[in-house]
Length: 283
Image 1 (cartoon, rainbow, N blue to C red):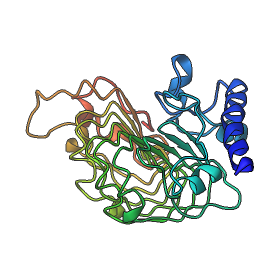
Image 2: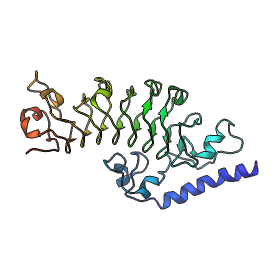
Image 3: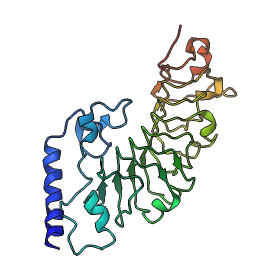
Image 4: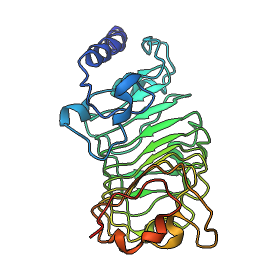
């Protein structure tokens, strides 16, 4: 019991030391830190291995360790990972983490990046309805049961980047940021209404997949990354409305279609509702 207590007391000190040396160019979750460090997390490319391994500071931590008197069911996860108030960090866990661990009650932020998680089951998050942010970047996830996120009514940010997904599950309606860069998604693996009900979605990242067409994009989206897919055409209803020549879409201020076989100069009338032209090939 003394060994357990010492281990738990030591963890916050290690996290603090890691935070002091954190690379300012690291990829960060928006909201983890203030200032210029906030805008890197959802960018197209994860920069260096060192940055990828760095732990972002917890959201509103009180630096209190999980003590020996904590719920016994929580201890295995918090000895394997780092648990601070409301946040659980399981970065590159050794021995290999191959599934979602049992999380402490009232977990709000889960960072389980660069492990070997292969599947997300319905039961994994069924009892953790307080989750606001999940980051599973850099795992081996090839399957997500369709109801895995159905009870996460508070979830705002979800990253499934750098996995092996061929289709997307149903997504929570309150998402503001969704990142599925670097997967194996094709258009048939993305339901027609996958994003239609996400009326609060601001950032949508689907770069470096195998999509053949642009999916339905909600009105709320401001940043859309679809570079390096297999998109071959853009129709008049992709961003604008064929039946409404007065329709405008001022919120959409960044669209990336570079690295696709589509030649955007063939469709000049399909971007008239936008305040910026998509980035891509025009010759």
